[in-house]
Length: 295
Ligand SMILES: Cc1cc2nc3c(=O)[nH]c(=O)nc-3n(C[C@H](O)[C@H](O)[C@H](O)COP(=O)(O)OP(=O)(O)OC[C@H]3O[C@@H](n4cnc5c(N)ncnc54)[C@H](O)[C@@H]3O)c2cc1C
Image (tube, rainbow, N blue to C red):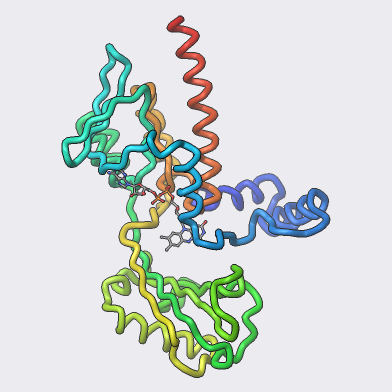
């Protein structure tokens, strides 16, 4: 579902009549608010040491002693005490005033199956795809085309082995030493799931052949790493938003239980962060209302 997967683009189309008009308006607004230039909200971004920096900063802010790390397997609601107890795979048990599940839909479904089997079944119907990321370092001299841009996506109609290639060293600083470039090819997904299960050598050969054809690369990579992300990307099917609405309606029966993460209203990190912020505001309101009624 376009609306669910790309909420920003859908809002642009709704508010401006078309996506291209919306993008133009957004660019204009950015120029007014930030005449000096700088990074725009639509631009790809990361941290110098990778995205783990974001999680480490959040953990730091929360205080590491306030964080418990275990695999949640079950959630119990004690209505009399208004407490949510999370149970873990190694016998852990921790109780809280409210519960927010932000793990993938299939994990949420498994955790919720004893609490509300119908809700869990509904959540479990959100399918996930796997991706293989093939990271390749080439000597600049072996890449004859100018790497000016973010890379390219392949049209799904071509059903190619690569979904897209990010020119990482053009997008982010410090991703390759001088005289080298770093490329990141994404493979697998709904159209080519078998790619993810190939061994490293086979997948690297296929990707290299594709890069030779599309970018005229002259020599094999001098650096190679294959990372597999199993069940990492939720698939928003055509009825996704109706499904999300039904899940939200079922949640009304469980005050104090919240669901978020990339399964529902946007897959990109920007969308996940925005949805988490909105949820935090919603919870703060619920919390102060419930304190008022109990005092
Ligand atoms: C290869 C790849 C490339 C991507 N590139 C981009 C990009 O360039 N730009 C972009 O915006 N987005 C990108 N995305 C999408 C984006 O990264 C994800 O959609 C987003 O990070 C998901 O965040 P999340 O918090 O919902 O889930 P996650 O980051 O997956 O976090 C879920 C957490 O739940 C934990 N968990 C699971 N089960 C349990 C359990 N039972 N108990 C306790 N914890 C549990 C997991 O360990 C994990 O830490 C990419 C995704 C992939 C896979």
